[in-house]
Image (cartoon, rainbow, N blue to C red; front, side, top):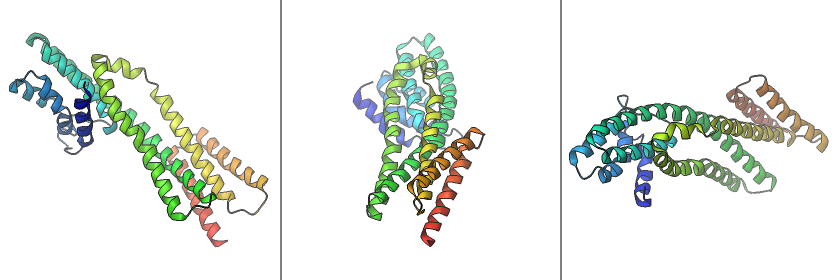
Length: 263
């Protein structure tokens, strides 16, 4: 897949959800994404191009950041189908439909767990931590807010853009080996690592927020921070959900801030 074509598909991948409907969900957006490739690779036959576009506009739904992987895979199989004989083409098209359906479900589960359930909270905690660093360094409130917002946008957006771009190339190279190659990635370890890092940052910020309003010795402050972090990890180990733990951290931070303002 050449750079120019990949860039066109990359740009169009941002609009996969723009034509979302209950009938075929992201299907029309997916077809819009791969349409330049189909027009170039279908041998100049309007009938074949329309048939390829129609089957790529069928019902499809996955986590939008992961859709580039499926788009690259679809481009690879459509290229094989265009070069195959009419007898073999129907079999390739059948495998394409099966792979699209199975990949969409698997990537939706992986993408939701990682981006919504792990990476977004981690980036939020990282932004709060960067803001607290700015406060301790004596930065102006406006600069602190801009630094925290910029940290969040960069930390969250960079892997999203990288995955959209790299996913097209990976899916195209994998082709019919898509399922086997996808299984080689340790997704659950990555999700657990992001969740653990986010919780650690959030608990650390909560502890710092508590002892920042205290006037006692630094040793006591250190004990408070350690207790906040340790208590959070203990609660997580005993089955408290990440959502409830983040909610508790938010409540503690709010109470600590209110107490600091009153004092």
